[in-house]
Image 1 (cartoon, rainbow, N blue to C red):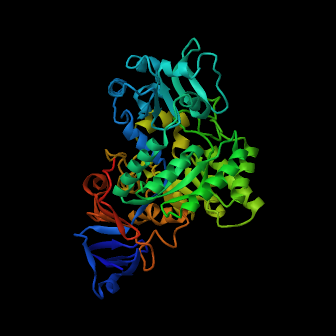
Image 2: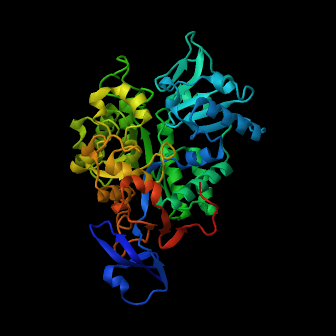
Amino acid sequence: MTRTLFHNGTIWTGTGSTVSALTTRNGRIEAVGAEALAGTADAIVDLQGGLLLPAFGDGHCHPDHAGFEAMGPRVRECGSVEEIVEEVRRYALAHPDAEWIVGASYDSTLVPGGVFDARWLDAAVPDRPVVLRAWDYHTVWCNTEAMRRAGLDASTPDTARGAYARRADGELLGTMYEWDAVDAVLGAAPARTTGDLVRALRLATESYAAAGVTWIQDAWVEHRSVEAYIEAARQGALAIRVNLGLRADPARWRDQLAEFAADRDRVRALHDDRLTANTVKFFMDGILENRTASLLDPYSDDPCARGMPIWPYEELLEAFTAVDEMGLQAHLHAIGDAGVRTALDAVEHVIRVNGPRDRRPVIAHVQVLDEADLPRFAELGVIANLQPLWARVDAAMTELTFPRIGAERARRQYLIGSLLRAGARVAFGSDWPVSDHRPLAGLPVAVTRENAEREPAGGWLPEERLTFDDALSAYTAGVAHQAFAEDDRGVLAPGKVADLVWLDADVRRMDPHDIALRSAVRGTWMAGTRIHPPSDRSSAL
C-alpha cells in the first residue's frame, strides 16, 4: 500500500481551512495537516507552490456531443457564415465517402434572429445532406438535400414540440427548432456506430481528466447509447466516472420504464466504479434564444408566445412518479420561469404521492426564476445545477435573450447567490459542448459576473456573485452531493476517496480574469491513481 505525500503548496480542503500537507494510501486520504508529515512516504508530490483541492465535478454535460464535435466539421470557432460554409466544404472534400455530413456547433448570433438559410450550405455541398447543430443543441441548420432526404417540404407542419423557419412563400428555410423538427432531419441520417460513440467518449472523458474533473453527469442519454457506454467501460475507454441520465420521452415513456430498469441493471452488472445509470432526464422546455423556453408571461418581442412546454402536465406527473418509484433520480431541464415552476410543482407532487426519501432531484439551468419560487428549492430538497459561464453579458445575451424577455425578467437570470442565501444546494455544470467544460473557465464568471472584457464593471447583477470558496464548493462538494457521493468525495478529509486536482497556482489569490489564461491543471488523481497527465492514453481534445 503506497503512501503518497503531497506538500509544498496550499491544500484547500473544502471544509473551511487550508493545510500544507496531505497523505493518501490505498486510494483514500490518510491524513491532512501536521499528521500527514508524520512517518515516511513511499512517493512525494511536490506541489511547487500550487494549490491542491478536491477534484472537480460537472453536474450537467453531454460528452458524446463534445466528442463528435471534435470528429466532425469544426464550426464552433467560425466567426462568420462564410467561415462555416468553407469549413463544411473542406470537411466534405476530405471525407468523400461520408454519406451525411453532421457537425456542431455554430454560433446562432452570426445572423439576425439566429435564422440560417439552407442555400448557404448548398453552395458548399449541394449533393450530400449537411446538418449542423447550433451551440444550443436545440436548433439545427441543414442544406436542401438533407430536407429532401428527410421528406420535409412546405407541407410539413409545425407541431407542439417542433417548429420550422419558413420563407415568405411557406417553403422551409433550413432552420429547425426543438424535438420534432430536429429529429425529423437528424432521424433520417445514419445512426452513429458503437465504435464512433466509444471514440467520442474516450476523447471527451480524457479532456475532463485534463481539466481536473473526475465525475460527470451525462444529462442526455438515449437507450441506443447505453451499449456504447458499456463497451467503453469494458475497453477502459472512460477516463473518469460517468453517471447516465436516461432521457424520458413524452411520446413513449411508459415503454421506457422497462428500458430504464434494464439499462440500470446492465450497468450495475459491470461492477465498474466509472459507470452508473441512476438518473432519468426530463426536458421541461426549450431555450430563450428561439422562444421555446416556457415563460409565465408572454415573450417581450412576441406577445403571442409563451414558449414550448415539452410535456403535457398530467403526463409529466405520472411519468415522474413512476420513475421516482423505481428509485431513480430526476434531472429536469428548465430554462424559463414557467418551466422552473412546473419542475418544482412536479417535485412537490412526487413527494406528496410517493412520500419522503432521499431523492435529490436536480433542476438544471434555472435561467429565469420567479422570486416566489426561490425558497422552494430548499423546501423541496431540490438541487439547482447552474452553468456559471452563462451568467455574463455576451452576444447571445444582448442580441437574442434580452430582446426576448425584457428588462425585468433579465434581472431574474441565474440567481446563484440568491439560491445559496435561500438555503438551496447548488452544484455547477458546464452543459459542454454548449459552453467550456473547464471549471477554471467557469470560476472567474461565478465570482465576478463579468465577461472577458471585464464588463460590466463590478459584475452583471453583482449581488449574485459568489465568493471563491462558494464557487469552488459548487464545483466539488455541490456536485458530490448531487452524485450521492458526499460520504466519499467533495472535500479533503481522512477516509475520503483520494480524488484530487493540483493547480499550478492558488487561484483564490489571483485576479479572477487571469485564472483561465494563466493557471493550469498540473495533475488529476482519481481514487489515488493519477489520470492526468495520461500515461497510456491518447491526448485529450
